[in-house]
Amino acid sequence: MEKAQARSPLDLAREVLQTEADAILALSRRLNGDFLRAVEAILACTGRIVVTGMGKSGHVGRKIAATLASTGSPAFFVHPAEAAHGDLGMITAQDVVIALSNSGESGEVVALLPALKRKGLVLIAMTGNPASSLGREADILLDTQVEKEACPLGLAPTTSTTVQMALGDALAVTLLDARQFGPEDFALSHPGGSLGRRLLVHVKDLMHSGEELPRVAPGTALKDALLEMSHKRLGMVAIAGTDNVICGIYTDGDLRRTLEHSGNIYDLNIDQVMSPAPQTILYSKLATEAVHLMEQRRITSLLVVDADGKLAGAIHMHDLLKAGVV
Image 1 (cartoon, one colour):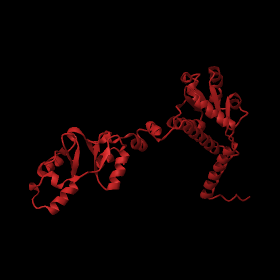
Image 2 (cartoon, rainbow, N blue to C red; image 1 turned 30 degrees about the vertical axis):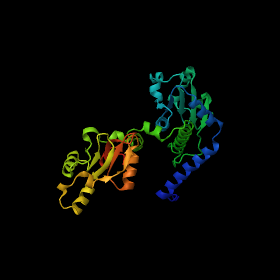
Image 3 (cartoon, rainbow, N blue to C red; image 1 turned 90 degrees about the horizontal axis):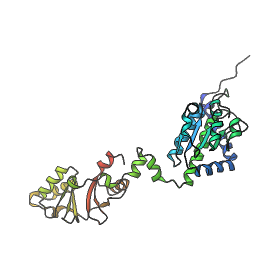
Image 4 (tube, one colour; image 1 turned 120 degrees about the horizontal axis):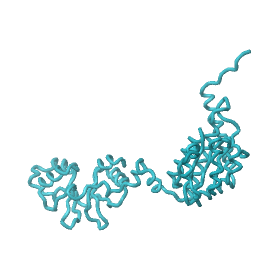
């Protein structure tokens, strides 16, 4: 008896992806009022969203909890086996529990049901078997049943976990929208990420001010202005009076142009060679706006002004690069 010809790896991979994609589309068509009830229950929750699940469903549950937490819905994962040995105390009557189990009969999850029901909290089940123990005990049932697993053996959780993950994302994004959770809110949950740096860092956080700011008064000899610029190492010097009104700026580029067109720079004062009315940025602006302005004007430094338009500091492209804003 001849063996069936093996499928190519690419054909098998495409079949897996198609199977999982079909299952997600089937899930989207199956969404109903239960999904809306789950959203409403979570929005009304005065405690936390507690996600639990065993095995592969547990791994998916951890991701769902993390996604919820990072998008404005405070959540954490509790391992069902650990919950049965004390961690159940982390769960209160004010919480909403989302329990994941494809079969709905995972022993560790089912063992928690009596205690969870006694707490009087809202229990949302995410299961592929609505008639299971978990499905029957749930206050809200989210049906994640699939026609088949993508695994050729029909054993390894593949399609079922993909559907769970997708439904968790749908839940998180729907809640995000309902809470009007914006980019700034997202950044507050991700201060270490690139988005957090772009949305949380302001010009005033990075600018050089006080003794770090290279500045001279109008009428200063060019040679003294160059010493100030060299000492502070920002490649520029601000020209401002005692009232902090900006008169101009002198940069490394200006120095090169001065050397090209002037014979003896020691006979000049800063007023003769500075660039008047320089580009400035308000100290309360986002650092990303400083980047945009520098790129647009093709400059490497900006003078920073306060709300009255007076000199408050200076910021250099190196500062923005160092802060990871660029």
